[in-house]
Length: 55
Image (tube, rainbow, N blue to C red; front, side, top):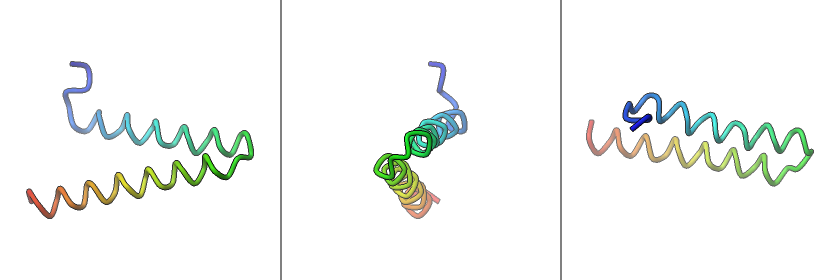
């Protein structure tokens, strides 16, 4: 699998989310920007919960 490394997978996901934010700024659509920021917040919450659970 191409994304077998956890760091690469996180970089891929963050890049995908940042592309949503960039697309929202380009189209001047605040909904897409807020959706990207929401995805970042969810990603942060999931990572923090995983650290609490397994770390």
